[in-house]
Image 1 (cartoon, rainbow, N blue to C red):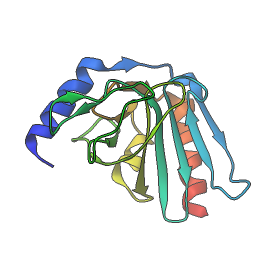
Image 2: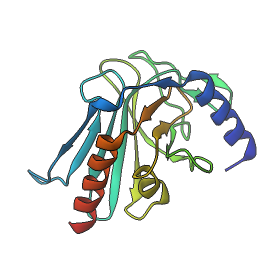
Image 3: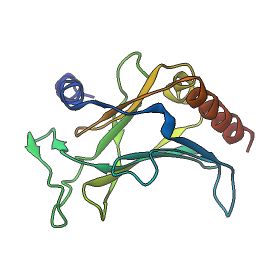
Image 4: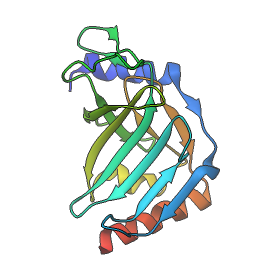
Length: 168
């Protein structure tokens, strides 16, 4: 990843960060053809979803707004007519240490506004493991990003999710 992208992304994230409450975590066991699912802020305009798949954890952030195309420096629209430029959707799970590992994300329009971004992380990803001990986590994008506190209850749910995911 280019240094310019890392710097621009980190600066944008820090400028637009919001803190969210840790109480919004929920864990659902595997059922109906899908693996265990861990959510934060389900039903809110901006939410996180982690789903255990056979070979990965599928990570989705819904309702992402104010995205920036780092190639052109232009904002990406949030309205129903907006289009995602090729290669502009990027996301990283960040547990507070090191640098975010941005990777290409799948992007879909969210009917309530903004974009739903999805990445797949290998089950052994270091940020997934680090989140189990972290004070905060975030799904970094080139748009609006929230820092989610990880209290003892949130870390317990995260660890239960990882255990069930790795056992499956």
